[in-house]
Every structure is written in structure tokens, then in C-alpha cells.
Amino acid sequence: MRPPSVRMRTGERHSRVKTLIACLVLAHGLVLGAVSAAEPAATPGPGAAHPAPAATDATYPTAATMAAPGPKLFTNQQLFAVYDRVQSILQQKNIPRDGSATPDQLADELTIVEMALANAADKTGEAAQAGYIMHASMEALCGRLNQADAELRLIIAHGSLQGRLAAYKELAEVLLQSGKAEALDELAARGEAEKIPQVLTDHMRMFANFLHIKLGEGFPTFAITDLAGAMHTLGDYQGHVLVLDFWASWCQPCMEALPALLKTYQRFHRAGVDILGVCLDDNPQNLQAIIRGSGMSWPQALETRSFSSPLLIKYGVWNLPANFVIAADGTLIAKNIHGDHLDQLLTKLLAQPDPAAAAAAAGLPSR
Image (cartoon, rainbow, N blue to C red; front, side):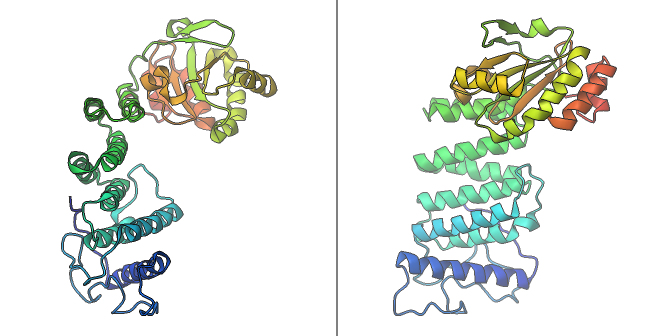
């Protein structure tokens, strides 16, 4: 279960990584009592814990090649401390999870985790498994999805229960990102066979179903009961454009998007656009108060089971706000489109009856 080699661009980059690792180990060693009081916590140098080869080397070490730094191996606590620091750096960089980052953007962080794993005292324990999963996650962030897939499957095959569950969840994200619906189906089936928690298999089923519902094809039918007790089916909206909107009052982005959605409804409803809301609140009185206070006049259903709802699993709704734009003939035109982008799509859809042509005109894929 070793991560792949990652080369540095320059000796200067390697020097920065070396210094950061040394600082991390010394700092956390002091906190955890791992550094002897007799050993000075001075500025990291050639003798500091976790030294790296000279920056003049033509090829730099990775987790597969780097030798252990003598007796001072990383403890599990120190490994987790390194991961926390790497995670903090990633958050500061605000790397998107769509695979659009470049390997160069994550070269430092990948190497830090590799070097920590290479010098782990326990190379198969929970801390090491967490490191392999973090490494695979970063591989996915920079678009190396096949490599991330392979690393995570090793954890699923050989890791502890805790490590396997974490790897299942991360692999589901990778397969979603790479659009592999069938692989997600297989992963969920394997998880069910291994009796992993239902919430995790539901999570994987959500991702698979989201991918199975394709643009340009008929939207799967539904039967939704609103707060007034009226039943709504997909057939009820034939001849109208429907925005099926999933939201919750506890979802800040949902509430921030509400004023724009109100304007969209006011602008397009008379032209043949309907909205059907599905709210994930657990209190009908609270929802009624929000409806009255905001002026929402379209029907609302209450889904108190939140993300364990069969409806949300069926449509692959794992995050809010979420919506589906369905053409007058029942064809799915767009997923998760909001604000001005939604208005632009509706304008083109009303002007162009053919759903595929309208999606193309709006710059959306037809499938």
C-alpha cells in the first residue's frame, strides 16, 4: 500500500518541505512529550528529526525509497499531527474537489505525507491508513483518479474496519468525480454484503443514482405529498417546465439563494415554469413560518428523514441546495443550477421548445 513517487521541481522546493517537516516533528514532539528534555528544540538543521537528502540530489526520495531517520520514527500521534497541518494548508489553499488542481499545486503536501508514511513507526496501523487515504484524496484533487482509486481499494481490501470505512467514503467521492456510476453500484453492493453502516451505503447509492440520472433523458417519476396534503407527480407537470428544488432552513446557502429563486418564480411562472420544493426541516410549523415570511407561493413538501430519505437517495441528493430542471416533456435539462444561470436556462428553454437545443443554447451538455 505504498503511494507513488512524487518528484520535486527544484532543490528549493525540497528544502521548504524538509524545513516544514522538521518544524512539525519538533513542535509536536514537544507537545506530545516525544522529544527528550535533553535535546534542544533549536532551528531545524541537518541533525533535526526527519532529515531529507541534500537539495542538490537529482532525484528526491518518496515513501517507497526514503530510509528511516534512525531511531526517531513517527509515532501515531505525530502522524496525525502532520496530517492536521497538511489539512490546514489545503484549506488555506482552497483547492477545489473537481480534479482541476495540478500536481504541482499539491507537490509539497503529497511529499510531506509520503515522507511521514515512509518513517512511520507503525506502517499498517490506523494512523498510517489515514495517511494513505489522505494521499489518495490529494491524488484525486489533482486529477489522478485512477491512482487514487487503486490506493483506496488497497485499504478496503486490507485495512482495519475504521480504515476501510474511511476508504469506502473517499472512494465513493473519487468514483463520483470520475463519473463511474456502475463502479459506485458495485462498491455499494460490496459494502452492503460486508454489512458496513447503512448510512455509508446510502451515501454511495446517492452518488450512483445521481450519475444514472442523465441529462437529455426522461426524469424518473415521483409522487410527493405537499404540506396541504396534495399529491404531486411528474405527470402533473406535463407541458410545464419544472424546477424540483431541495432545500432546508438550516442550510445557509439555501436561504441565501431564496431571494433569487423568488424572483425567478415571479418572472417565469406565468410563462409556464413551476417550482416544487422539498424541504428537509423536521418541524412543519417552522416551515410554515418561513413560507409566510418569505412569500414562497409554490407547493412545499416536508421531508423529515433528511438525507436518509428514499426520495433523496433515488435522485442522488447528498448536498443542499440541489435542484433538477425538467422540460415540459419530462426530459431532464440541468442539475444543480441556480441564480442567473437558472434564469438564463429558463429563458432559452421557453424560447426553444426542443430541450436538447435549449440546453445547448445555454451551454449545457445534452447528456
